[in-house]
Amino acid sequence: MTSLLASIDSPAQLKSLTRPQLKSLAAELRAFIIDSVAKTGGHLASNLGVVELTIALHYVFNTPDDRLVWDVGHQTYSHKILTGRREAMAALRKEKGIAGFPRRSESEYDAFGTGHSSTSISAALGMAIAAQKAGLERRAVAIIGDGAMTAGMAFEGLNNAGSMDANLLVILNDNDMSISNNVGALNNYLSKLLSSRFYGSIKKSGKKILSAMPPMMAFAKRAEEHVKGMVLPSTLFEEFGFNYIGPIDGHDLDTLIDTLHNIKQLKGPQFLHIVTQKGKGYEPAEEDPNKFHGIGQFDPCNGDLLAHAGKKTYTQVFGEWLVDMAAKDERLIGITPAMCDGSSLNAFAAKYPQRYFDVGIAEQHALTFAAGMACDGLKPVVAIYSTFLQRAYDQLVHDIALQNLPVLLAIDRAGLVGADGPTHAGSFDLSYLRCIPNVLIMAPSDENECRQMLYTGFQYDGVAAVRYPRGSGTGATIQQTMQAIAIGKAEIKRLSGAKQKIAILSFGSMLGACLQAGEKLDATVVNMRFVKPIDQALIEKLALDHSLIVTVEENAVMGGAGTAVIEALQAMQSPNKPAINTLCLGLPDQFIEHGVHETMLAECGLDAEGIHRAIARLIP
Image 1 (cartoon, rainbow, N blue to C red):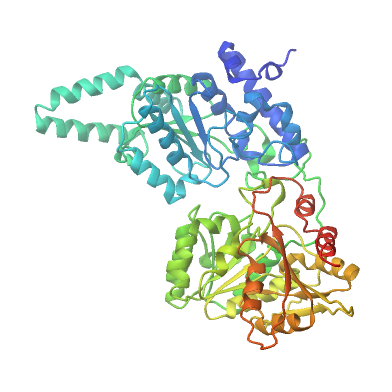
Image 2: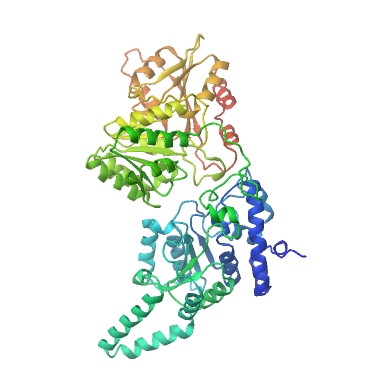
């Protein structure tokens, strides 16, 4: 039997297929995604849920001229496969391979690059207005879902779009039945009817006639809302100014295509609500969509992971600490912006459900919510990825730091994050945190130090941040007893015996590589532990008897921990202040593409060999 999928290299080829062929294509596409992700790892459940929607969109709309803007981006594998990247899926998220998210530089079909959520409506609205200004009939479609509607930015976009007459279509991919579960033949029929030109023309004509009779107009409006309210979800989206259509079955290709064809003929802002099943067509993913949201290599026959459990990850260390600390202090509250699994809050949520708050994809709200709790005696711990904390920067400055509130930030995924690439890399947190007054910043060198720093930050009477990387550390023995670390005090891990002394100041998880380089160079190696306050006294002491001070961090060099050391050297009050040579090593001033974490570090010169090589160049 000839494969339909193998014959599709562009969306234009879809248009020649019959409806039965499109349904066969959907089955092939779903099987291909399962087989492909089993080999490479990646986002599975969300992609299985949008197979039919992706086919329908490319079948109905004239892409890439019509703009498809995918929210979050982890639901675009079908889109990539149908737009000429089928063979490239073998290298998905690998070094020099295609990204796991839309990338404008990767394909003309990727209208907008994304990795964070809730940006689609704003971006698509911008494109719709651009088309309007140019006098083009081009359509802009925002596909939002997977929790992205919980973010305030999505509603900001809706609020703005509803007041304009741009040709914007927002598709809500409701994949967890969170808004409505009344999907069936009746709703599909009503949605086709409500999206048709006939209904639109009758509605428009009726308004003209009734506008001359205000009481009748008001009565008709109330009657329309009452009837629609009986069979449709809330009229919330119509209050924003959208023409609401749905909900419809997002796996029914015929209904999707007919409805999209109708909507394409309509003018102004349109809102289509579809309901899909996350993990559709693959039983293990249907039963446990969270497990298969982002997954490593697995056996497609049963869904079992192929990788064996190794060393404990920093994230697991945090999750265990949170449960232990909660047992000791009933004021502790755990907060996450929709990352319970990723931040390892599952055990805490199960044991202390009344003290656990998942606020949805709403990072700004998460921080101000924590600030309010801290004002009234609670001790909130916000578990958040470094890259997502960027989205709540003003709340951190204005609502927490300015008021010097006791909030602990457990900042996960600090530094490079491997296959997820630059959209998810925590490359900037040291730079953007250290310029904020009142913030204590710690960076653990191993798993045990992470546990002790979390305890230190929780006990601290002010804003504290512990930033730790993705994955496992050195495999250090974790002491269950929690002890606070002296604030702002570094520790010397290796003392140089050389005449021309070199001091390597390591921040966070770079310590292992720094110690290896230090052995080759016979250098002093310091585990700095604190980025703010920096250990001023130790830095001054090192400056007096070392000819070169080197800083190493998995953070952007610009404004990072190395800059803090240079500032400390400049502040030295010694009358015999020496001329000090410095070298700051860290992430370069560019976005680092996805790949294997170790390889990425090596390419940035942040492995032991790279550190040694950079320092050796400066030695006469």
